Structure formats: structure tokens, C-alpha cells
Image 1: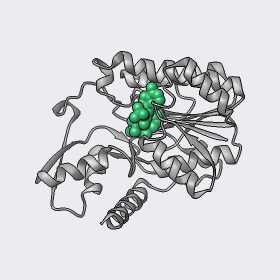
Image 2: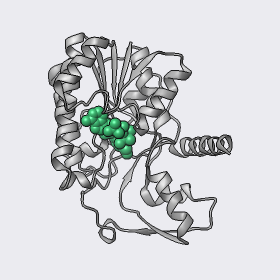
Image 3: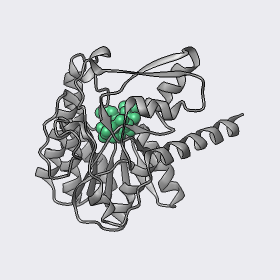
Image 4: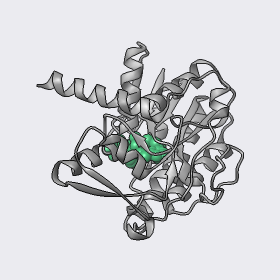
Length: 286
Ligand SMILES: NC(=O)c1ccc[n+]([C@@H]2O[C@H](COP(=O)([O-])OP(=O)(O)OC[C@H]3O[C@@H](n4cnc5c(N)ncnc54)[C@H](OP(=O)(O)O)[C@@H]3O)[C@@H](O)[C@H]2O)c1
């Protein structure tokens, strides 16, 4: 049996869709069914279900709010919540798949991609708590996959692609940061990798997984809006201040995932597939 935490989030929803397609049965939970900050409830649910695999997609993900107003909540969900899930997973002998982030790195390496073995040094609270989550998982259990990903987009939640499309409806010009570089990741590619490592019984440990290729947010926005008349203009991070500091260069090395035989599409291909899926969904609704 498979258990998903955060099953209604953007990744959790994509994963459910993929498992449905693969005809794999699972139980998906949200915070009302299994609040991961509640150690007792988490233990009870997991001991009752006795899953062999737990895909832990639940997290606090509002990067800027995590700096101040939701600092305690971010820590509670990403650190204590993850510890609760890992302890319960260990108690029933489940394999845990924990999703982490490129924001565990400070981006100071510039021009050199980040390997799994590179030393993390998070610049913001979200990165710090996701790293503490990683450390809790690794301290508690042996049979885990920590998958670090970045710049996640997909059809089932709020993300940069939808934000750009929404803003494009009411603006003729958009300014987007052109001095932060990373790799966009389609939830579909990530969900496929999550099931791949489990099904192929890949060696346990840390993996980096994003789509192939890299870009700045400005370049990402240009690609998203390439079929529109909206002008996209580059700005610096200094011109667009945000609460949380972000790494300037958090491009992760994907060779460990690729060495398993997992084929990773480029972010442009992934984006184009995601957008055609989203158009198909709209057509269905209409
Ligand atoms: N989004 C990105 O760009 C990005 C980048 C790098 C890494 N990641 C990582 O990727 C994973 C998936 O992210 P996502 O984009 O799918 O996030 P998301 O859309 O924000 O979903 C997070 C889910 O976590 C659930 N959750 C929050 N607090 C909970 C609690 N106390 N107990 C149980 N569930 C709780 C939420 O469910 P409720 O609505 O029921 O509260 C929500 O469905 C996370 O680990 C995230 O850190 C994301």
C-alpha cells in the first residue's frame, strides 16, 4: 500500500493522477485527515494503514511568508511534521520519499551545477527548514529517498506559469528578474521520478531532479508568454525586492538521476506539454 501526504497540493495531485494511470492503489491524505504536525495522529494513521511507501508531499511552501509572519508554522510543518512522518514510517518499515528544494543551497557556486554531495547553506527560512527536514529523515531512517527539486510548475496549483498567464491578461508589459538562475520542474516529470526510484528500487539517498536545461525567471517568463503580445522586460533582484533571499544560481546537477536510466525532458518540452494539457482540460470543461 502507498500513502501520500499533501495529496491535494500541486505535486500531490499530479502524483495521484500518475498513480491512477499506472493503476497503482494508494491512500491520499490532506491536513484534515492526517495533520503531520500532530505526532499522535500521524502515528495512528500510518500504523493503521501500514504503507510500504510514503510519498511525503506535504510542506509549508510560502517562501516569503516563512521569513517572518509564518516562521513558526514553516518550522512546525517542514521540520516537526517531517520528523513525525519519518518516525511513523520507521515504525512500520515504510520507505519514505521526501521532497526537498534547491533553496538548501546559497547559489554562491555560480556557473557550476550543485551535486548531491555539495554542502548546503540555505539563505532563507524555507530552505533552512527543508534542510532540517532532510536531516531528520536521514537521522531517523535508512530506507529513504530525498529528492531535491526546484521552480515547480504544473496544472494543479499556484505556480509561476499561471501567475505569468494571469498577469498577462491585465498588463501589456511585465518585468521579471533576470539574475536568478535555476531549473524549472514540471510536476509530471518529478512525479514520474518519484515512482521510478521506488519501482526500480534505486539505491537510497539524495537525488536532484528538475527538468533539463536552465534559465533565469525572465527567460522562463519569455517562454511562457511567447505566443502573446505582452512585453517581458528583465530587471535585477535589487529592483524587485522580496522578503526571502534567493540563491542567484541554484542549477542542480542531474547526472545521478540520469545514471539510473531516467530520461529527463528539457524544461521547454515539459512546459509545452503542460500547456497543451492545460488547454485540453479547458476544452473538456467547456
Ligand atoms: N513549489 C515549488 O516551487 C517547490 C520547489 C522546490 C521544492 N518544493 C517541494 O515540493 C513539495 C511539494 O510542493 P507543492 O508545490 O506541491 O506544495 P503545495 O502545493 O503548497 O502543497 C503542499 C501541501 O501540503 C499540505 N500541508 C500543509 N500543511 C500540512 C499539515 N500540517 N499536514 C498535512 N498536510 C499539510 C497542504 O495541504 P492542506 O491544504 O490540506 O493544508 C498542501 O496540499 C514540497 O515538499 C515542497 O517543499 C516545491
